[in-house]
Image (cartoon, rainbow, N blue to C red):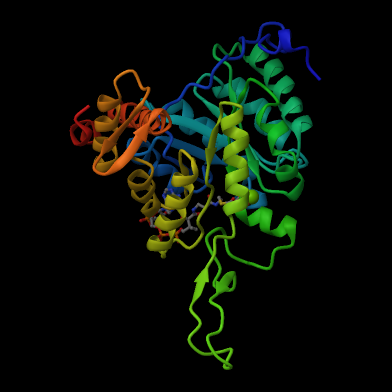
Length: 349
Ligand SMILES: CC(C)(COP(=O)(O)OP(=O)(O)OC[C@H]1O[C@@H](n2cnc3c(N)ncnc32)[C@H](O)[C@@H]1OP(=O)(O)O)[C@@H](O)C(=O)NCCC(=O)NCCSC(=O)C[C@H](O)C(=O)O
Ligand SMILES: [Mg+2]
């Protein structure tokens, strides 16, 4: 365990000091692209202008023979693109792979000052974060990187979920955690072959009303990911870092994608992954508070004055706690309005 007084000291001589707080920037979608795919790479400048975070993916979904091309492609794209306010992230290969050491060495020393966050897949415990933490410090020093890189873990093994609290607090570099439902399903030996989303077999059924057990019993599909998302959100909130839902693989089913994203939003996630351009606007819509929610929050905060006591608004009791809920909504709305002129007008903040 680290000396708590040394928690915010650099882990290598010449590395920048870690941040004491995760900078909150709009993070409604992490848009994945494969830097070795010429068509996708060509779209990066246009897509970067529309998203909060753009991520060069080097791990799963990139063919083995393209791993080096993807890494070098990302270096080239990062050097020649102006990302403006949009964050640039990378998902490196997993820590047990033959590529990750070269991923980190090349990226940090070549484009360390352009990158905001390193997403690390299949994190299983604090030891994985500690390894990346020290290595990043050494590479930042070697590459003369000025601002510390942050780390985002993907929760996608049963052991990772077991250790999610210690992962969330393992380093001041921890920026957030995403749910990786596909690898997690495999690791848990769940019997679903879908990439995220629900399953029609996971349901509850109304009690029987007569002798016929098959008649008139409505079924309700349940959310396979509720427990894990809720646990991840608690681990993140308890450590002041940000939780994200991950991928929704059924690209054509934009309706169910919106539902999955909204469940995550309501439970506390700040964003989700977009795997295809069609998912960008879904995430933007879902993870931006509605005009009605912002208006309600404003009304409550104004009526509550110093935030103490209780008032009735439209037949509902509001008090210190609901005022805090409204402040969460308003803080998010203000952050988003700063970046998005349409939201600024919509929210009238
Ligand atoms: C899912 C896809 C393979 C679909 O690609 P494609 O068949 O080419 O779709 P379209 O024909 O509809 O594409 C239309 C055009 O848009 C471009 N495109 C597609 N996706 C992207 C993108 N992500 N970014 C930029 N541009 C994109 C196509 O090239 C077409 O262009 P054009 O022909 O010029 O019109 C594909 O979308 C894809 O590969 N997406 C990313 C997949 C990915 O990153 N997967 C990994 C993350 S999920 C995961 O790892 C699981 C997780 O870890 C877990 O364990 O749960
Ligand atoms: Mg995965």
